[in-house]
Length: 391
Image (tube, rainbow, N blue to C red):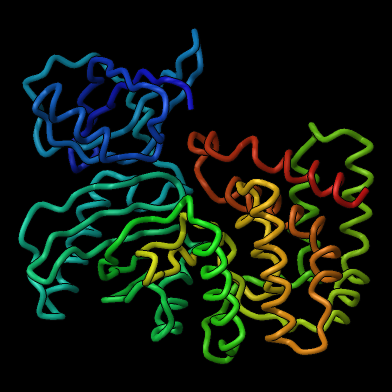
């Protein structure tokens, strides 16, 4: 990630624009979604207590990303501010609730009330961790340890209900949930982005055990990731990506047109459809070597469980990837006797890439225009990969 020069466009809780702060420089490696870093920088530089609402503008020039974040403050600061274009705070139909002035405060009020109803008291100022188009995350210190407030868009809003349905499995514990917001208990440990191979194999076993155990009747309504149902979303992704070469376009169109026959061939491999995590990479497991918890179920749906393979192995070296994949195949041979997981995985490889493209297109179609910069370039490489795998 390249270096950034950031200004905050400040407003009051009622949306009244105040102005633009001076610029702050951030070195390479800071995540655009890292609200905590921006809050800390504003406090250190100007003594301001801000709440980050959203990324409002980004332009790359001279090796820097020049960015403006919308942020709210409780009162007009003493700091000298430059004029700000009021249209930056104009209403946008696709804007998420937490990205609007007053939105974070409303969600925090709900969380505080929900905790009190559980006999838990907030003991300090909530800490903003993340804010972007796919989620808002706050940590609330309480007399029972930390609690986490997570808000998500409508297309991820089934996450809280999925977690409740999976209670008893190694998933986060839901304290309370409402439309698009979930209050979660703390999980000790760390996010396990770079597991050893033995730990990676344990992660696979954990997922396969959950998928083998869950029944659809126990789950809320979910997106369908069944192969036969991917056509409309895949077609939308293809039609919305004119940069794809004609050769690749023809190949992707053949994949889409053949999804029905592919679905039948995959079904013949003998592995039943089940709950798909949808973003099963090591960083979405948290804990210690002896205790793992599987996070972030917003991408989940109902479909073929081997859809979860690519995200998990894509950052591994060739040796670890081969070992993890072989372990996965053996796990499903055990879970579904007589099945042919290797053939199923081979059939699903181009379909899985196509599914990734349609998911990113789903994001782009349902988030406000200025924040599409996060995902604008994502459907194209996945469509290319689908074509290359099919070839």
